[in-house]
Image 1 (cartoon, helix red, strand yellow):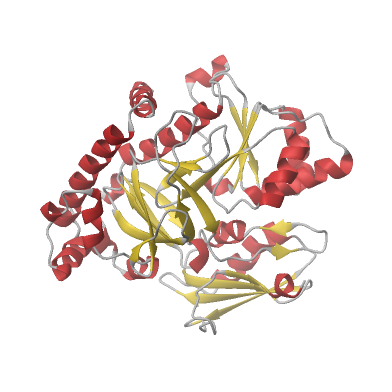
Image 2: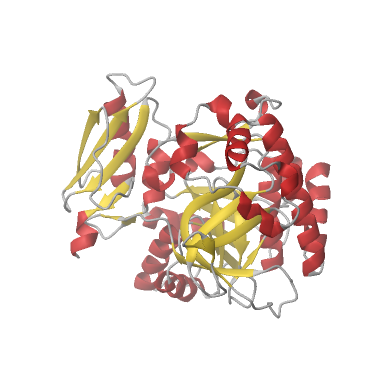
Length: 426
């Protein structure tokens, strides 16, 4: 508790600093991470050696471009010993599951300090948006990511929270919210938009949180408008990824996302060169608090753009916007529900023995799942995967699962975990 408060206070004070002071903190953390990665992580030593550079060659933030970009697929193919720090015991680390848009389940490891940093950076942005410690909170997320630990201060009514599974029916989620009456709601844009549409259809007006927050998926303007109208608020969105935590966040101005440059480095690259202000390009992120499994110049799979404006809110961190999110489709059910790709990948991530998967909605009546065999694959793996998908989709659609040695490639060369032919034709 004391460690968390100390760290939070430090992070909050950073937002009062001038831009050049923040960049000095950023550069200092970057140099330390590069030295650590070169000395302790086989992959990064090889990467820097092959590029003919040493950590000390990076003396400015622009020098970071000397280091080659790391693609998701390249990092996923590595053995654990190649991409984790040899001087850190991964057994003592926090292990996070992710497969993202590729459908390749993998583990990410964070030291307990770095994982705490991720939590506190999220909390910092929530507090800037107006969250109070006495506010009752509701989290509508994948249940695998739920925080379940109860602390002494929860009994005093401080930071009390309730978890609601995004896999349950939207009507059930809405009833939970009506019972809880939260001051703060955080969830995926797709989940909250579904609840919001239901509220507007029913004329529900008795769920009135002070704050609503979204993250983990690209927030579309239509979703924003629907959620705002239903809850009677102006929601705050966050740009985040499992590998890096909260990368950027909205303030009251809602005119761009403040980049957390005290905990990450964000580059926008177009044709292997830095994109100009306002010019869209690939988002490249360095997580400055990723010591167990470093993410340095990591291509995250999104398209974004940097802004040359300074936000009038007073926080001098640079601004960005996302243009396109990770390339995924939603599954459309007969009852009108939209199933987020994150719900699908977050479920199959936890079925052992699957190296990679692809879930395709063939029609309103049929979903197929191809499961590439991995370590620990067993005869019951296919049945477990089918049961897991049934929990999300319900009984109104046929689920066909089959095991394969390798997934067939797509014509466009992309590797996507979730596709919907229904969405493409409707």
